[in-house]
Every structure is written in C-alpha cells, then in structure tokens.
Image (cartoon, rainbow, N blue to C red; front, side, top):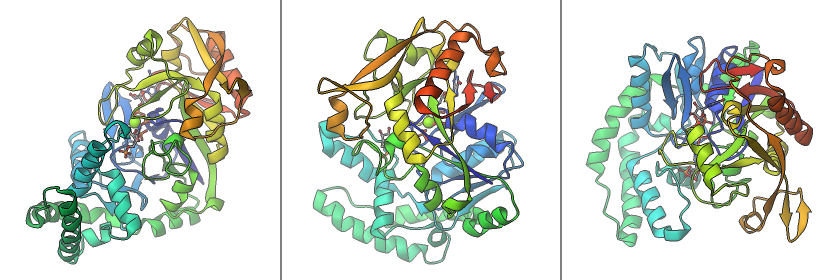
Amino acid sequence: MVNVVIGAFYGDEGKGKIIDYLSKESKYAVRFSGGNNAGHTIEVDNHKYAFHLVPSGILNKNVKAIIGNGVVIDPKVLIEEINNLKENGYKVDNLYISNKAHLILPYHIELDEMQETIRKDKKIGTTKRGIGPAYCDKFERSGIRMEDFISKEFKTILKNNIENKNIIFKVYGFPEIDFDKVYKEYKEYAKIIKPYVCDTVTMLHKAIKNNEKILCEGAQATMLDIDFGSYPYVTSSNPTIGGAQTGTGIGAKYIDEVYGVIKAYSSKVGEGPFVTELKDEIGDKIRELGHEYGTTTKRPRRCGWLDIVALNYAIMINGLTGIAINHMDTIGKLDKIKLCVAYEYNGKREEYFSTNVDFLSKCTPIYEEFPGNFGDISKCKTFEELPINAQNYINRIEELTNTQVKFIGTGAGREDIIVR
Ligand code: GDP
Ligand code: IMO
Ligand code: MG
C-alpha cells in the first residue's frame, strides 16, 4: 500500500505532523521532491524537530526513511541533520539515499542568490538554498548524482563542471569558483554520505511486492509546483502527485490514498499572488497566534483566510482522496472566521481557478462567515467532541470540496490530531 501526503496550498501546511502520524503505520517514508527549501516541524515532548532533507517519518524508529531520486541534496545540511538526530538518540542507520538524487554545490547557492539580486523587484523570494540552479543542472544534464558524488570519478566530474561554470560566471562578472576549495570540502562529505547511498527504486519495489506500507512525503505544495503553481513564483520541482511517482520510481497503479494538507487558514512565504491575503491586523493576529514564521528562513509568513477555489484546484490536480486540516486550534481563537467560497473576477462570481498571475491579481474573494471562539480543543480526540462551531466549519469545507476531512490538527504536538 502506498499513501502520499501533499501540500495543497503554498507550503507549511503542517505536512510534517501528518507524515509523522501516518508513518507510525508505515514501513517506509520517502521524500520525493525539493531539497532543504523544505522545513517540516514536528513537536515531540516539547522538543521541536525541523526536517529539511531527512524524511520526517524517521522519528518513528521502525520506519526506513528514504531520500528519493527526485530530491536535490545539500550534503552539508544533510550531515547536520543526521548529527542532530544522533544527538537526540536516533541511530539513523535506517536512512537510505537514492543513488540518482542530485547534489547541491556551493555554486548553486551563489547562483540562486545572484539571480535573486539581478531580478530586483521581480524577485521570486526563493529560500536561497540553491534549489533552482541545482534542478537546472539536472535537466541540463550537467548535474552530479549521488552515485557520481561517492565514486572515484567525482573529482573529474566536479573539475569539468566548475570549469564550465566559471566560463559563465566570467561573462556575468561573478567571482570564479575555486575547484580545490570545493573539492577538499565535498570529498569529506562524500565519505560520510556514502554508506547511505543505494538503489532505492529496487528497495521500494521489493517493499511493494511484500505488501509493506510506503508513505510518500511531499515537500512544498501544489501552488509552488513548477507546472501547476503560480509561475514564476514557484519552486523548481513537481511537489504534486506526478512528482511522487518520478521522484521515487513508484508508478500510478501502486498509489492508494493521496492526502492533501491545508491549514484552517492560509499562509505563504515569498512573492506572488495570494487572493485571500489579509494585510491588516487580522492577518497579523493569525501570524502571531499560529507562530507563522518560516521553519527554514524564519521569514514572517503572509497570512489569510482559507481559499476553497484554490483547494478545489489542488484536489483536482492531485486527485486528493482526503484532506488533513491543521491549526483548527489557532483559527478557533478568533471571533469570526471567513472562508473564501468563490472569486469575483471582472464583476462576476467565478469558481474557476487558474494560477495565471494576472488572473489571480484581478480576483477578489467572496466570503462566507462562521462563528469562531472554539475554546480549548486540545483535549478533543473525536470529531464529535469538537465544539459545534468547529464541526460546522469542517462540514462546510467537506460540502464545498466533496472530499472528506480525515485528519484534524488541534495543536502543534505530535499527539494533537483527530483521525476520522
Ligand atoms: P510543513 O512544511 O508543511 O511540514 O509545515 P511547517 O512545519 O513548516 O509549518 C507548520 C507549523 O505549524 C509548524 O510550526 C507546526 O509545528 C505547526 N502545526 C502543525 N499542525 C498544527 C496544529 O494543528 N496546530 C498548531 N497550533 N500548530 C500546528
Ligand atoms: P515546505 O516543505 C513554503 C517557496 C519559497 C519561494 C519559492 C521558491 O516546508 O512546505 P525555492 O527556494 O524553492 O526556489 O523558492 O518557493 N518555498 C516554500 N514555501 N514552504 C516550503 O516548503 C517551501 N519551499 C519553497 O519561499 O517563494
Ligand atoms: Mg515548512
């Protein structure tokens, strides 16, 4: 059985917490796209784990955690994460890294930063982790895969790559990359990472044959998808359902449930359109109540109401079979909650969604209003125990999306979840 967890909106919906829950009953948790632009937080006994590359499923010690071929890896960040886990009592010998995953090198990070500077007011607001340039090299066929990284050929490949990059850097007037410096540092990383590298495709298909449960762990989200998101304000991979297949080697016929994660409101980091954004004191209040500051870059997240038009698009693109809604505790602290049920475009009601930036910038939200004040819901363990205002809000989301809300987040802790 293969289940997939996908961000339905602009990222940071609380995927980490849902993955943590679902991986309890899984044998494998596999990250399939993105890199350390992701930040997945799980709170265990008041300790906050922030995962950037290692699958969040690793907190469940019976799980084999896989970094799939679709991921781009900054080895320095990965090693830091492995060490942090070890310091917290995790053995990490259950981590496996695909031999086909690509390497992020210092020049990718430099390029990411430089390109953002050059874009000036057209900047994307990237995490500056080198994600875009690393995927560019992958698709341009000059990337370095894990199997190259740990091989004897690494020195020659890297030398050749840096020579080529320096030709381009010279044209732009950027400082040249020092091969010796990079090689010296990265050959040490390669030694540390080598024992984890293997053929994860074969491993996953053996698991499928043995009827073992696999959880595909999405990073980023639908609106950040390179094809289906609000281009160019997107990331450089496919965080949607297709990415779960190409980023793991698991074909469509093996996939069972596809869960889309949302918050009871919306948030976004980086530039680009956000129809339900609240640029007022309610937006500020949500940011403070929900601690909406980036896990990776610490940037304040833009906050707004939940957008059903966008959610229905995510359901359509990913074929979502269920919804996980986090931060019901946060939204319940407000007196009134708004839910965007349609847009107004050119003076007309519009339920159609397009990630076209011009279209979105001309849409204004049409809201339904709900009473809030849920009170303390942290002790609620079933849907029926939730206050009626919270039930009504969720019922309406199900009605408008024709999709069941299967998981309800009632707090940041790993146990703060209602499963239906
Ligand atoms: P991810 O990238 O989708 O895994 O999400 P992040 O970890 O970046 O951001 C989600 C934030 O919300 C984290 O700080 C979580 O600890 C927190 N969180 C997740 N679910 C809930 C919830 O139901 N209630 C509250 N209060 N916090 C939550
Ligand atoms: P998780 O997995 C939120 C955003 C960046 C920027 C855009 C492009 O934690 O949900 P990139 O560095 O990928 O080239 O930046 O994508 N972004 C995220 N926003 N959560 C994430 O991951 C994100 N990963 C990338 O802020 O707008
Ligand atoms: Mg995050």
